[in-house]
Image (cartoon, rainbow, N blue to C red):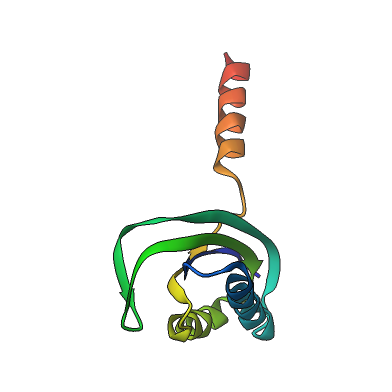
Length: 116
């Protein structure tokens, strides 16, 4: 299964409501067969511009990154489900590289230095 990262912006809420929205999101992934690897809270901050979602205008949001493995066939369903969630302002799924670009860069540099 390929590795993906879900960049998630939730509307500004109190801690219990935010936790419930995150739980729903992770359950949405797991019910569809995804394996959640890691979750990172990037904090609450001002949005780059006013976003309108579900007839509400949002100026602040909580940012999260969720790292997971999933079959590519479930991604459309997951994103559609997240777009319908009233607490989610913006879900974005990105495919993560299996190989880190830093390691490749350093390996190429080391081989060039060794060749002289």
